[in-house]
Image (cartoon, rainbow, N blue to C red; front, side):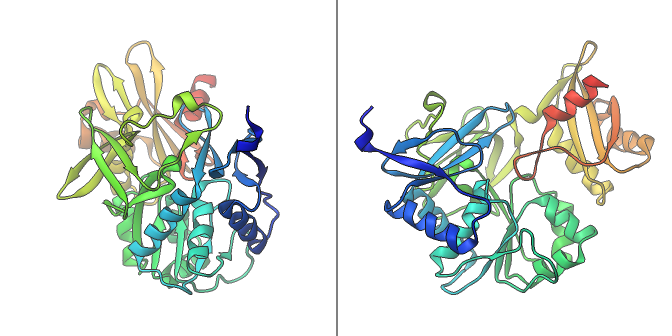
Length: 358
């Protein structure tokens, strides 16, 4: 290996203050310091043209060390600020952990505006007003149901980006009724986080649907490599193929759910995302997740995990009436909290293991 063409990677320290973190990011982007890693990253060196690495694990559990150039990160930050009308001097608040691309993005967007974000991750007392912030649906749910302090903070913002997982329409409508200006984002670590806002691709981003109905993305925001598994990072003519099903209607992307979030139960396809969407209409205050469990009779049996207690018979009858007998769950489980994969995404594999271990 030609070490002269490599640069060192250092792990971003969670204890760093925001000004120190911004200084280290600046040095990494400008090439005047080592590259920075966030999350689970074991690689120690990378190509000189790369600046940041974010460790991420998908539904398979495989950790991918996603590497970015300065150009991709800056393009993402500028396109995001442009879409929401952020101008120099505007302030962001940081409510997300920095071991994920979503948290890093808040810092990058702020830096592009000549400011630094207000760090509210472990903040005590009343949250100050800000211009913009970014959260996951779970945080929005809690703001609307139980966290009045967070609710006031979100109401003060000009725009609140919500991403990281599917946002139920009922939750969005409730937030809007409370005076929160929601913009739903879609993307993944490989696309520098959210790159489609309310169904519209950001500047420099293209979105298409392949012959299998799967969403693919290309543009200036794309990552460059998986440091620990380059053979798994594939761009065809610049297109990155996601694991999500979608369609484009009147120029807007509609995300239908993950291709691996469809189970086959009794020979019929059943969308777990559709199950959750239907439940959110009838039970808007309920935190729940649908998942499949291997079953000798059904192939995959539908199960529901819920936070708290509800009338299980009512849930079963409602799903059966709304989607047919195929949607009648074979098990409903009450748990204290939903296991998460990354920020916001429910870990369905862990739920399935919990049931198998019972």
